Length: 338
Ligand SMILES: Cc1ncc(COP(=O)(O)O)c(C=O)c1O
Image 1 (spheres, rainbow, N blue to C red):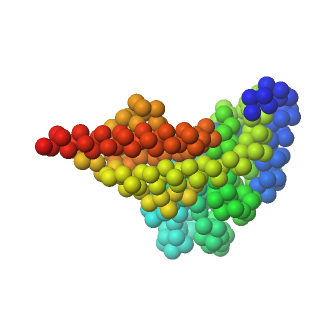
Image 2: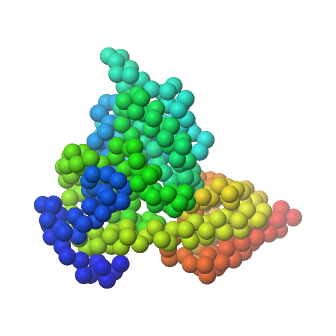
């Protein structure tokens, strides 16, 4: 990837003159079964542009309450896009057709009209769960029936495709806009893509510029993106296997709750119920002090992610460290209570 970056042919992409960016956009559009694609600096920018293309200002976006666009994008849908989010609590990351139907508002002179639907696949805060294709189809069918455009936050669509053994295009089909990340599991240093129709991507290019996301000799980054796109999916199955293995090891520890069978891709979330006053944050700090990096999501849950730089040896080392830390914390609090 570094070699490809060093050797990249470049031009000024703000003028559409960077051959490597163009190649990346063409390959991504073809791979996902869309007319056109736009290279953007981040997944967040791809989501924001995609949703602004679809959802009229002053209307409501139906979206799961734990979606990335709700929790981690600085309220930009509202502050920049003028889009109101109607968040739905869901069991596993995706609303039911019944919940959508109950939340739907047609345009009127009084209520806020429903302007769009956003889905996330895999779902980050649901622990990397994969949207079952049949459920996705039903949700898209509902949206079509109601005339509602649908955006897919497919930051980790590749992981869903590998987990289901389906081509990514099969999971992108039927959406109006799809965002995918080249960073994350595919391991490019930077970059995401938004795919849609030619007409929408022309407007997306303008919106990217409005957000300050027009990049000049971006071929250096696109070259890494091409390696990620062409080769990256081949190493995801190993990430998934390692995440499951880590979850199984964690499930054996007292005070840690996780269902390993729910770990479908490269993300796992476990609950911490250790004796004493050890919050998720304290546990994560103790792991980090020994070189294992995880993220506390709140006082009692922790998220881990496996990726290309964690091989089997590193994983076993992480399991050893995590086990030792949890035992030390448990023993220390036992000593304290005596
Ligand atoms: C589901 C999902 N969507 C979008 C993003 C945003 O990607 P980026 O960090 O490139 O902006 C992330 C990042 O973690 C994510 O998990």
